[in-house]
Image 1 (cartoon, rainbow, N blue to C red):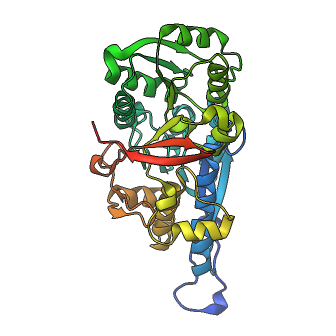
Image 2: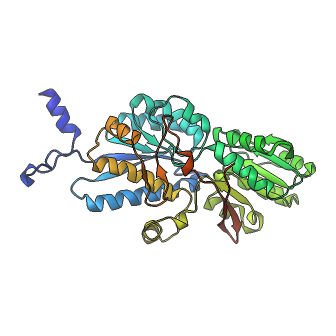
Image 3: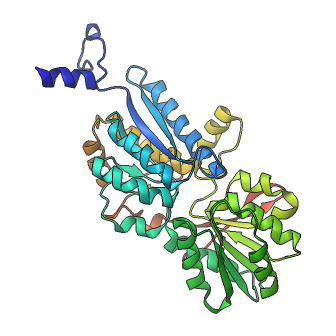
Length: 374
């Protein structure tokens, strides 16, 4: 009897008077969305959260009798915040899947907790390759990792015909890992490298090294919060080279905070196609909902949320059932067109990985080209 009482409390049951086989359906399930929803790097994550909200709103419109909700977990992009949030998600049995964590550093902290809780995750943007090497059965990545983005960024930089390249990273799990891959691929073109720190605002020492190195291109591995003041100080010092960053700078804040004069001509690489050219009705639906074009990773997050919703729609109402559902998943996303199929480590099928370059022009990130795979 106690078990029956607990089971009833854990589920939202439809009104018995409605009759039919639908009585007893588990409702009020949650999909977690984990990432920097506030702070200097929120521009990388907010479009994905908006897209996840849109996917759930559309689902609920068709399932008004048994709705799903998005549970946000605002990590601010900080690993030290992630553990408490992950424990909170793990303890809430209504949360049957997580879109995220968005960043690699917070993933290293949160994913062991999700693994212990058997809570499946699909990250839309955490690209550090080693995340797939920890034996986390719950781990799935919805984009390519830095083994694809790093060499692609280097290929793009080589296409600029630079005489020398300088490389700087922010020492984060994401920034350092991506920069290492870029340096490997650039080889002797790299004339120097340096390290920034979290929340650093004075880059004068690094700026001096860059300007005196003769580098005509620079790769920055890290996020907007530090990349923006760094680029502004480089320009103020008279450096005219091409500033290239990874997807950590591919957000609206990098444009607005840096300003048109300094950001013009900067390049961001991303293991994502332009969300503004997504398939189906996604772009139209997003613009109607938010009166804005979809931003970075919005189409990816939309598809990943819909995968969890599809599992719920098929009656998968426990974490174990959702995890099993993901193991055999093999379908294209309605927005990205990417076929989501994962190997035993949670990595996306390599044939589905794409890397694009975006150039800052007139205050906008403009798609430049898809970079050939190395």
